Image (cartoon, rainbow, N blue to C red; front, side, top):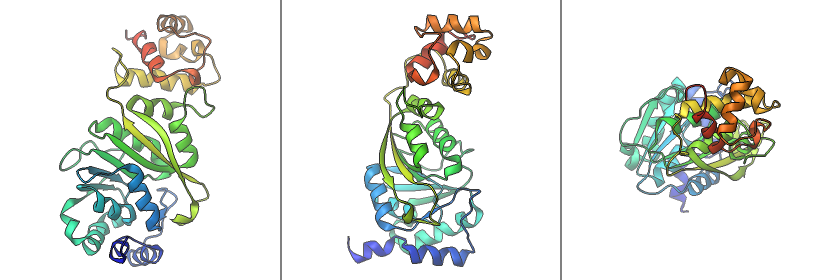
Length: 288
């Protein structure tokens, strides 16, 4: 990497200076921890496999550490930022550091949980250091809203990364694991130390890779119907599915009927089921 390359990205002093100039203090409420290490953002872009023809959507760009690295590698980048001050400042940062790429950057001042459309060409990749307190709902919303997103790499709290990538039967397998598996093939893609952030969080971070499935599990049930079964199964995860799904099905007997029709033992628990199992149960549910 040449010195001019490295000068483009934000280092620790750049981040603190920019934050001071804007009067920004990272807030716990928004789960903000800014990346201050250029090598880390380069690693994220590399691990994400960002290609020159990619249209990348980034959620929670903050001061722009990752944004600049993405903009160097992708065709274009759309950043979704909820914070008023950060949203206003980011285009100027891009203009100052990557002027020849500034026309490839779009800022959307919005809440990623409420985004229903994005400007410009359809996104092909999602790469983000997600705010930890809303990481899972933001990720699932983006995957649900934008089927054109083929590849995703997100940095999240380490235990959230474990949950998202957990296989059936694992202790941490739960609602995020199943819903992520509906959309994609999910795996852990590395660990990130605490010292690359400002302020340093009191938790470790992990990278999660999600590659969109060619198609969701084959089922006549809608995604909403399948997710309703998933939510019900894990709301009382210690109970057998016959008991846990009683409310969803209308009664324990109706739940047992749906489970047997789906080829699932009524005595099983949610953490032993695959996303395909949940889809089969939904097919034989009350709406069927």
